[in-house]
Image (cartoon, rainbow, N blue to C red; front, side):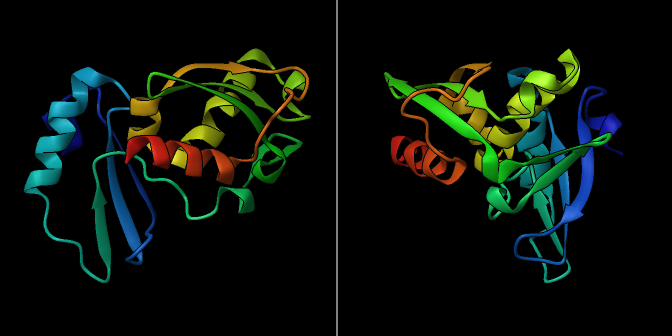
Amino acid sequence: MVAALHPDLHFSLERGIRSIYAFVVSGQEDPRLRPYTDAWKAAAEPDTPLWEFHDSVPAVPDPTEVTVNLGATRVALADVRVHAQVEEGLVDVAVYHPALAGLEPSARAAMTFLPLDATLGERLAGERLRRVEAADTEPADSIGLLELRELVHRLAS
């Protein structure tokens, strides 16, 4: 069904925020796919107590309660620290976690972006984050994920 809209779209079934379940159609931050996800959301049924529908991966309610398992490595997002630099309404970030340096390059890249998407949601992260990099040491003036969420929401409003 989702591939009929566009072959590059992805979908997932998740725990809902307002409903029991969530059906998510995502372009994974590819701006070329935004018209397809927008059209899908516009045509979707209204949310019900059982199902809610999202046209991008939503933020989790509290990312600091999330722990990601990468093989034998457990990465608690509560331990993620971010240096955020704001310029012209966009944010450049350096993401630090003590486990990042020991991860394989692909896992390191995933764990650099995953906390940001979990905190901001796919759409807001795509709109407001400009440069994203991993940090080997905790940056000076770093903030936690919930503080980053507050900062980006202030910029977006």
